[in-house]
Image (cartoon, rainbow over all chains, first blue to last red; front, side, top):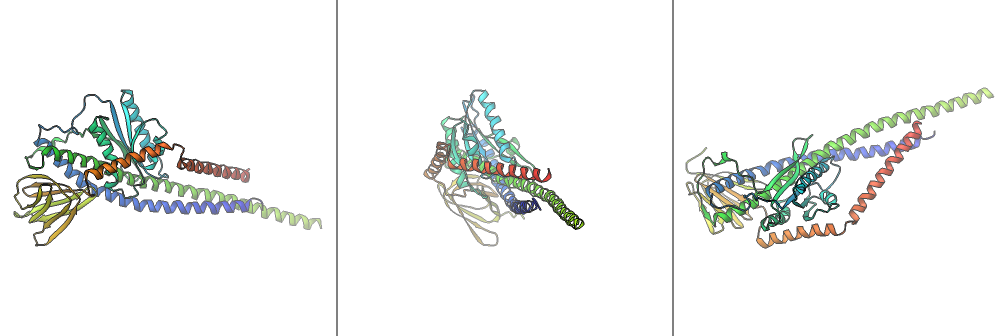
Length: 287
Length: 142
């Protein structure tokens, strides 16, 4: 029976692969749910922070925090790119990188220099091939990123902004729309966009301990950190969703491949039997 | 629910909500000294030192939360504690920033490090396996 043994071995190997992809799909599903919960958990902090900042800047119109002020000329920009550490997540990272490259080109055309800050191992492998300087990098945050792991990386960019090395700071990451859809999004982190006017309807002045300016700057810093943290958590949710979909497709494909090979195997087996029978009949006739 | 002599207290951190509920009194480690906040306190905004936030509930219970720093916002009937999850200090932040920079530099230094080599090898193995499978299928069918 020529070939049947090889086909059988191949079917077993594809079945084993299918087992792995199915397991990965299920793991990704449960991890995605947990990441979504963490996304939700991060929301109250950002909301509270925003309303306090809105109140504070409305009550202190005479203090202009450098974090809030638009700079007239933009000589250089900073981009924080949030990517995953591992692959097998569909086009998730590729989309984020494409968006980043578009943003880079857009600003480079106006003559601005670009500085990158990379979160995730995949971004590092991709962007280090370019000549763009990389200011900071952090990877292997795991499925549960913590704010404390991001502080240093964000601080590098905040310092560059305070020193005037960069005049604008962007964040590129994946937005988790739903399980099937993840979109790359660009957010401007610095200068912080003016708080929405609706929050300011009832504002009051506070007693400050220490100075209002110090508190405002500290809060703005935390606010930006929390946005980066949110992006990191959202990226995990997106990664898991993308992996779930990719692994489901892989499992289905493996199933199709197995069916196809099973058919070929059956045909080969049948052909061998027919041939053997014909030989026996032929042999008997000859006798 | 909104009794006149209680405060709405929210203790939140970037990683999640820690506490949300009513209280008759809140104590917090403000940067200029510990403060106690009762209902109808004047609006106050202060940064916090690392320490303990104590919340006295209407039932008379006392709840303790450790905060690594952060900020507290007080309105007459509302207290919001924006807690830091990590212990923060200027030199600690500085060290973390330095580490992030170094990581970037090191990763850039060896462009042909073993990581990318391993990736290339894996890619090659995958392509070879696919070619082999295609050849085999063709032989069987053809």
